[in-house]
Image (tube, rainbow, N blue to C red):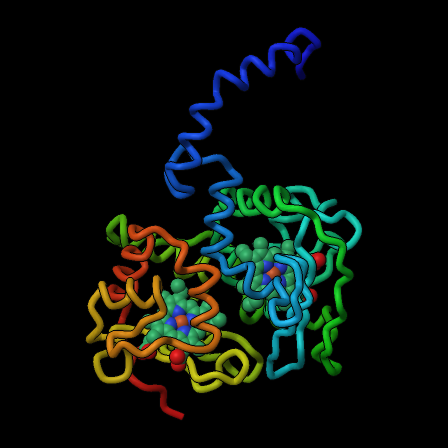
Length: 300
Ligand code: HEC
Ligand code: HEC
């Protein structure tokens, strides 16, 4: 703890470090030496939190929740994750936040629904998760009451998640594939943990669990009923004939090799998230996608 004399020195110390701080800000958030808040801003973009937690359509404030997310089980409304203590997560400890993000359990001990992709975020490092929290807490808190999900029974019964978790949830950190290069390992971390590509690009079974043997193999019934393409390196039905540069261009600008623009939830994921990633991270994602086993079309 600072004593009185130490506290009076603070302005002087701050002055001394100001030039260094300004330099760190311009160096880009992904660079080492960035503050937790800057790193957190970058990781929040990679995690796509804004898209689900902002009700853009109805003019909602950033991260204040209320966005409707349709699913075969009913409509979810994302909660307020700003620092407001009454209606947001301002009162949450670091442990509360880690438990929600990485285990899908609320501070009150309730199971969270997997419409919140904690099933992917479980692979995030604690340091990255806490940088995201630091960033969220650095923004203006917004008072906005959470809206109840519109789910018919039994899907609204949180305790039923107990069984779902046993079947479909593997907690634990990201493990890079054996022998992975540094880029493939980084790309894998981004794809599997933060950017949760598999939550949309992997087909689900009737209970909403991901079909692991069809990892990134695409599905006709994605979020909001969208068709989500196969992004494994299969030449016939996947993106085997895309170059790594083609993948980077798509993730940065939303443009496909045939110059068409990508649509729907992918366009959203790019606008508020993936387009903000560094070239090195986008190249890492492309390298990882090229390294996974190719899958042909799914037999219906
Ligand atoms: C695909 C949509 C989606 C994405 C992406 C998403 N969330 Fe959520 N999040 C939800 C939904 C829906 C809930 C509510 C789950 C429930 O009620 O069980 C939720 C719940 C939460 C909660 C629990 C809040 C509470 O009051 O219980 C936290 C914290 C949270 N999200 C943080 C994040 C962060 C941080 C990110 C980005 C790293 C993120 N979310 C990305 C949809 C999403
Ligand atoms: C919220 C759901 C969602 C997430 C998350 C998501 N995608 Fe997509 N993605 C889609 C949809 C839907 C399409 C199809 C868009 C269209 O038809 O225009 C798509 C299209 C693509 C395409 C174009 C493939 C083709 O053959 O046209 C690529 C490549 C791609 N996504 C890669 C990724 C990667 C890599 C990630 C993670 C970094 C990711 N996506 C995360 C939903 C998602």
